[in-house]
Image (cartoon, rainbow, N blue to C red; front, side, top):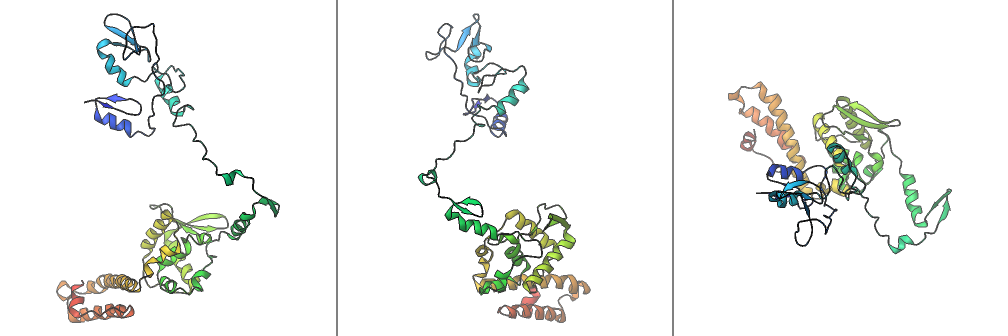
Length: 343
């Protein structure tokens, strides 16, 4: 079975070579040089002359000047590039070596892949002359004055100088719930598309132990061991709150990289999970209960043997902590059996 590329006519019997040709970095293009016609040479194919007869067994292709046998000529037509060897099929420039020919053909200005795209058609309004006015020695459109003033109001803040008035003085109850979570506050302050001036923290390399803070001299790197607590303390100080999600520094490090790679989001997207109060209470209760259960397994159960881990005093202690969290979010309390089955 023979595989032939529909774009450039490349043909091969090996399937893996055909797949490699289709997936190569520099995509192939159509052959724009048709095989010329010549009435004074021998051979014919659909009334179009393709080859010159050399002897009884061999012929020469008129397009690429390659000599082949008559038996293999039809096969040669499937892979013929229409130009002689080491000749650019776009500008017909000849080269002495094959590497020079291949390198040139990638950057040839007549290659359709390298030709610039035509400019998009302009609408009638854009073609009309725009009225100008003098504003601070800048000629700008009257309709652009508002945009000009808005751009002047946008000043990139440095770390520790973020403007969080929209969080402190908002009457939206969702902000009060979001201020309890370090994860949500980090998104609302540093990765808020509605307030791009507050994007003063980022982490661009996942494997690196460095994060970056914006300052007067640009982005300054700092280790995550000191940068994560610095970012958390700065958020708690500006928002006058205390985070109760108890996220660890490695977790915040991963969240910081994820937010930096994802980019800023609008406030409606960041606060969407607080639209349903019941769902929010269940989610927060589940998160805090998991943290309490993990701490219980790490600290308390390590003091007891495997036979004494289900003792009533141990289960009652865990039940008291879990039910305190569930009452905080108006969730039904757990019984001793349910608590014993949770670990």
